[in-house]
Image (tube, one colour):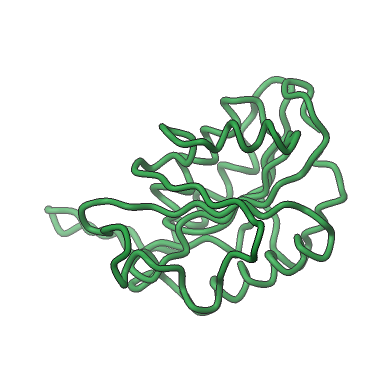
Length: 189
């Protein structure tokens, strides 16, 4: 566990797996199924699942696009955090909830890889948490630029997986693993 952050609890953080966020996302059905598999694993292993739900002008609270995808719903008693910025930590109660749980290790999945997942991953590491990014349980759409340049979603996802494997912070451990390799009981090294 992290030497920077007190606590010994692993937490699974599911970010923005909402109808409007994944509607145009790369391989969304496969990624949503992988997130659901990881949620089931967390629940079986007694790991708290914390759900983060984004709202914005494009994703108004209560709208059909704002809703969770039907395949993924928080269970009774699981924590729900509402956010308005890319990072799940900014102006939310997430840090308070993680402290209440004694969390020192965050496993992360959801959407969109290049925005909310990236910002939340860096936010977690900067705050002293160990981090596991589920390499096959986050997604985004292609990025198109005004000059016609396009970055494929698969490349955005692959780049973030590599970054989370090689990134280095003192006293913290991070990695990217596939859902099938996930064991919440194993320490991150």
